[in-house]
Image 1 (cartoon, rainbow, N blue to C red):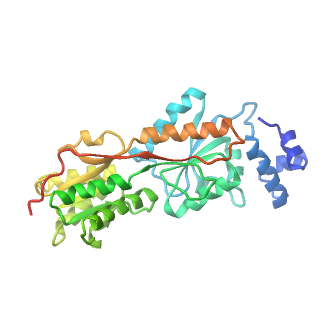
Image 2: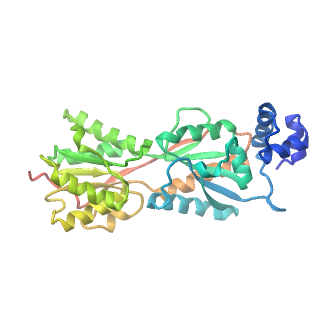
Length: 333
């Protein structure tokens, strides 16, 4: 790794200027700051903490945190499996709180002792991921995809499986099919809604916009969704729930209300792990391997850290698949 002296020489500035950039000192021109940051990112320079070089990899929320979700837990578990092999440590950051005013993201990461970042984003914070990529800091976005040439990303493409899941319900005779999506927009949920709409279009059927229902991705959100669906007239006979914990709440509430699954209501869920085997009846679900996504994200990031001159962005879609179990059946209404 380059030294401060080497960074100063490459950027054409003094060692004092490099030190000021690292410490976010206000008496540095934007031009000088840009030169120093570019040299640091090109050489993958990371400030030392005490006498030891940092081994931190950050799992970064650019928007609202979803730290308590099984999906994020599985992502970090997958990352940790790869990090253990190379002696890295995991740090969790909220970019909104961690970044100081007038500080670049690179400066924030250097101040925190971070070598590379795995980014979780929402529709409203995609620009943060783009800015970090534009600064040249080693980063990989999880669960989203970008058209710009310099953003590394890993995601599961759930469009085709969501279309297949909705078609499965339509072919069972269901015409009134609800879809439950998170209240927070992201590309994953957009892909699932797109698949839902495309299935209706391919069967020459209109989509009833009332059946596209937003609910928080919590167990309580699924409980509320079931109560809402059962009060609709005419009510849906089937639904596709795009978050695992929402499915758990919905099925629990359905059992409490005496709703028979799938006789009264067919349910397709979304599963990041093995949830489909732990509910009753066993869940028909669109499935993805969140552990694999996290592991693959670290592998990409590690490769970028090892080869700082490799400027070709990694853009990778992992597959999802539909598994049919016992929670879906023919429409009886």
